[in-house]
Length: 340
Image (cartoon, rainbow, N blue to C red; front, side, top):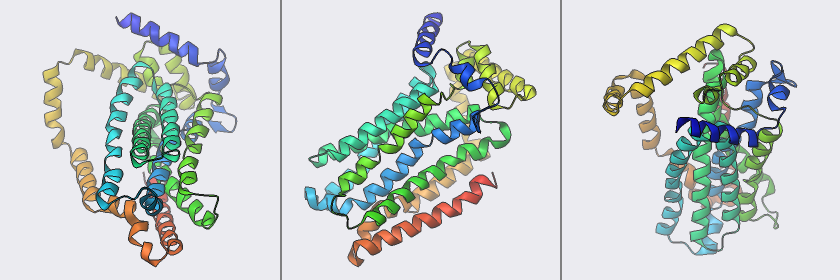
């Protein structure tokens, strides 16, 4: 069965990879002016950017959407809260797809789903269709963000892994800032409706999709090694790690050991590991941070900000919304780029 799956996977890889792909991309330590890691980080921005764009746009279109569809406060709350729950399907889809099809195809699929979600929202004629489009986009966003995080952690050098993975947060805020800035600039243009802002959200996933395919971003070396494609994994790592043979050997050994341990563990042993998870300081710290963020009400404020300030005028509300996102984005840059 394992050999059959490997055969299917190899066929998929051949179908999605140009014959000269590896030689074109990995012939040296960089592609053009960008290294392999920098190229991958640059073109995998769309999932987080789309999440930021969608969050900001949904906050900005609350007033016109409420008027157009005649929503009550309960319906508005359901519209904002229920569709994102479909993001759980994105997690389930992502875990299966990344292991069977690969990180790269999963990224491409997530970008397609995000673009489709934006189009469905923009073309919606009722609140149910609007919520469906929002849910489709949530699936693509959640699948893409986790896939990108896994992909970058497997491709990045150890010394820069933290900052490269943490740039997802920057991309989210760039998406928010871009959406609010565009709305502020285009305010008053009659041809630009809330549907146009939603549709513009499909641009980033499409650009990322084309970039990943056209620029031949490589598959994750971890995935290649999992499926027995050792030579290809070494080739990608050699390009990504600038030929550091010591780190390449250490990384491959760690992956091989971890994979062997996972294969021999029973379900009971996995359950026991989960029980010890709360004892880890990192897990406790992450849990506290998540609870603090969730309990602070920041999600509610971000979602309903323009609605709360609608009494002071749309232009003033948008202005404060944009300034708030600008301040947040600027405050994140030092922590991501300098201190991680």
